Image (cartoon, rainbow over all chains, first blue to last red; front, side, top):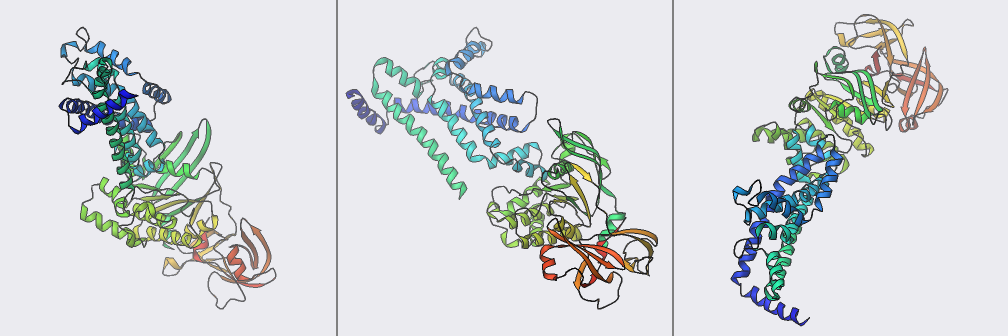
Length: 231
Length: 347
């Protein structure tokens, strides 16, 4: 346990001293994970709403598939996207591999099912009369879906927070598609894995603290948003 | 009654033929034919599970029939999304327990107006006018989701009226509201119909309440329309004075019943027993529809009391229990019978 105490003390020192390496890693993580969360939400939430409201053959199968994809291992997504982005892959000439864009792409594929499922669950729990009311008052399908989404905004916000939590904590996609290049694609989780390999825990513990603080911060913001909008 | 004249002369708004809605192969609604005319108040009466809500969902174009056709204002209902949106804007459904979006009453009333791209100043005027109509103006800035049951229903009526649809479809508008609010809802719907000319089609499991609001009622049972129980049927000759509203049906016995709006000549009418008014004692004046008779039978019926009166003609009246108790009428009593024009339906 001694190393943990020592490392924690050193980690706090790094955080208070605003260590440039630490800040850079946090910045990369926020840029990559923030981008993937926003894009996945923009794509996933409408997808969830569409599945919830549209009647089409195979709807139940689509929902089962989405639920299954929620459990997708990060390394499987990493491998799949790597196959496309590697030099010999279909998208190899774009030169995306080991860039932030590749990481964002991989993370989007990873969390779209999660985001869509959250949206689907959020609006399915809502009273169906909300949508019928919007329709009978003259809304088209898109405007009615937007009205319903607004009524489910707290649950949707929780979904977005969970999506961010998933991407900020994942290591497989970031490592396999980002390559853990220092100052470029090194994120908090890949840096922690590396520091662990090196047997150096100071930075790893510091990053762990920041990661937890960030997750706490995001959830606190969601919680405050829910509280403020309800009163 | 202007409504009676409207009903018989105005164009049909809904023409339904062979309408079927099935869930999992089981027919929950099977209406062979039904017509609702523009400007009328029509009640669909039936017990819970009769298919009333299903019928209104179809008439609001929120659900598609399994088979059959709904013609609206002379045209078949379109199947494309754009056509359906245009149609829904003319037929607003008010749910049994209406829901409001989060935000103020004003914001909720503006929702449909914004969709119709009504300019802001006009929107504000329409919202206030509609709230005035239902007596809810002080609630303009109240949170819509915190209104009581009766207030929610009134606000929902205002929300529908603000959009000036051709028809308002009300699903069990008195469910979950107290007696006082029930009477208020009936008055409101009647006002909306009279002042705005909006057709009202409502459902109710309460036949008494429905009778007070709508001259024309259809009965739905297990998904099918059942024929009205015509009773108190009389035939005679309609005589009109200079004003057609003064029409009188003269029975072979010489008794005179009010028959406004009916054409002169031979006619057959039904007197709705729910509209017949009884009072102990002899009539104070002699006028069409005012008779004197003896109570020959009193019996309970569906939560009300049916009273059979011998007044030269044999006449049935049905009173709600509370009114019967107040009247103190017993078998053998002499009673004054008043048949208001609203009780008369041409048959």
